[in-house]
Amino acid sequence: MMEYCESGMDFSPLFSHGNSIYIEKSAFYKGLGEGVKTVEFVTLLDKKLFFIEAKPSAPSLSNPENKERIAEYFQILQDKFHHSLDLLASKGLGINKDLTNEFPSCFDANKLTGCKLVFLLVIQNYSVEGCHGIRTFLWKKLIALRKIWGIDIVVINSEQAQRKGYIK
Image (cartoon, rainbow, N blue to C red; front, side):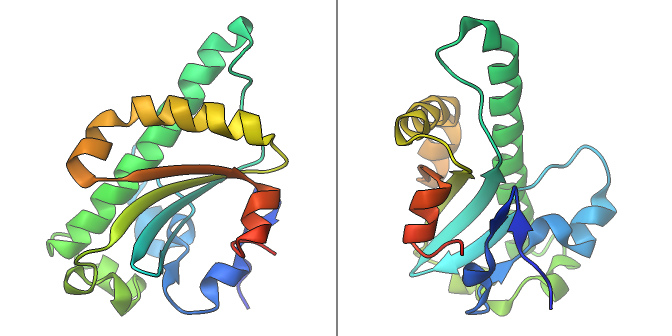
């Protein structure tokens, strides 16, 4: 049985219903090579399409010495989310037919009509206050994607993710 662990967290509860893909481990994604980034998982729950990224830590936003690390951290998150959304859109438009074999049928474009898009970042053992700061930063950084796609951004720690049933 495949394990769904990322950044020290077990996301297997999300895969129990068959509406998820471990996109980062998919053959299609691996075949793309360098230059394309992706989130760990994409899952469909209650008419919400979650793009899930897991991180073991995050830089402190209050430390001015972290300016370069913060910029790099957020650029990587932005790229991962944007590229993952592009991959799914290319599947829906029939551009990347190879994705059809790896994505469950629940990800067919006609089945996603009316779904809310959610970028979910789970940071292991991070403070709730820190999560709020990261979300605020992402909210500003992803303004174009939010406006075009109506995306919601959720940043939680591992304890919150466990209470919501996303991780064991």
